[in-house]
Image (cartoon, one colour):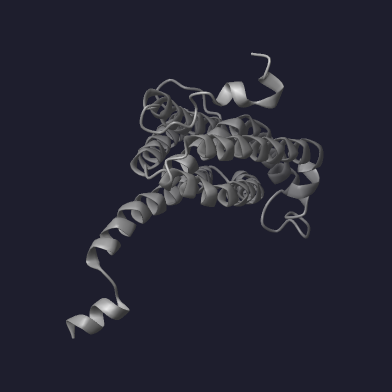
Length: 249
């Protein structure tokens, strides 16, 4: 019986090792998505139009998030291989690719949201207005979207660093950064959406500002940790000098 279990199930040590990597990644990804969900829930307390606008924009933003995830995941396969070979030069090459890919996707997203944002939001608002004022929902969605664009660079860098750290075996730092982001988002959502603790009542704009702040906190945690542990994960030691447009440095 034991022999059959080992043959078809595998070694217990292997499962512990896999779960030690997989569980923090699942928690971190769940937390990242929960940030947007918090906005939907808390804005929903102030009105249907506000919630509709925020929910629509978050669906559009999710497309950008998935593009970033897909664009960086391909390079991640090579990052893990290079890390296993102790090839720090290879890790830096994949990290540089991630920068270019994330930059192209982020600039494309900003361009699309700025020039076609109204049309994209309007696609979700066609029909009768029995569920609320469609023009108000559009206005709230546009306000939320414009502010959220300021958080895209932070999300971009956070994903670049977090994916590389995970591929190099460091999964706890991105998870802790995600927990910090949710905490910041929840706290600032409360004070900015509803106007608590002396802050102005900003509604949808407050939700967007809170989310942007949480993105920068999350990015700061992983970036600062990485720079302080260069001896452990060498992805940045000569990275800036390798950028082609900065070779003259």
